[in-house]
Image (cartoon, rainbow, N blue to C red):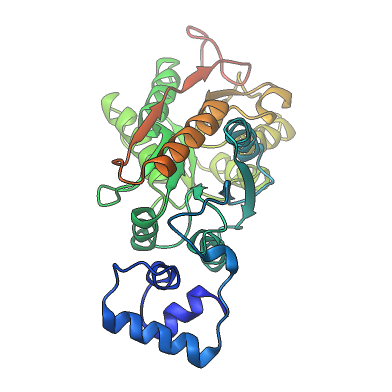
Length: 336
């Protein structure tokens, strides 16, 4: 039995239950009575760390990661942890595997004041739940920002602009058929922005959007390999691939090399993130670099400032991206 269970049985939110447990008077008498009745009936014993919500600090932060297999996230975590430690905080790490129930379980740690704030990569719970949490507790979004109705603290790059500029480079090389690997962008704001950047670059160059060149796939090497196999089987295959992650781009390079197609000569390949694989794959990968260490530091700084001043307005920080040119794309002027 936890706060989430009590909230469900009482027909209210975990945040409201937390207020009642910590004698916060901003709750209606009827709601308070309902919650206390459920607590009595279930013999719920609240965690002692949940007491004195407003006056006690745990000096701990929580960072929620969707996976630990992607070095992109670990680089951000290390910088986040370093900044927090230098300012007297320790950091707990939670791996959610993009499971909404696991996410809710870890948010309970925030509700019971076992941590003072949370930094979160794009979760799978609803935006309504995110907004409710962010309005009650110190919260910062890493590498994403919400749709217009979501008012939260965030640190990210301009994903639309980054993809637009990468596409401009490929178009200047003379490409007209450019494949793209994206994710299920209907539910992730950064994927929506990246898709916009891809399409806007095509439109600005007068290139019709070809849906057969757009592949929705997972963020891993195997998915990139299979997506490339699909694209290269087209009657008119692409002459360039814009992969919106480096792991998938590495999978694309593997497929091309295995089938006698030369990356950077026959087909140009562009990645996204600039993680370690971009430098060790052969040929090395041209990519869009996200400032991972700066993202970690800024997220920690923003979260600590929110903890110190709960009434401060939410703030968004947009950091600069950079195109890194390596061997997987040809140089301007070289023939396609």
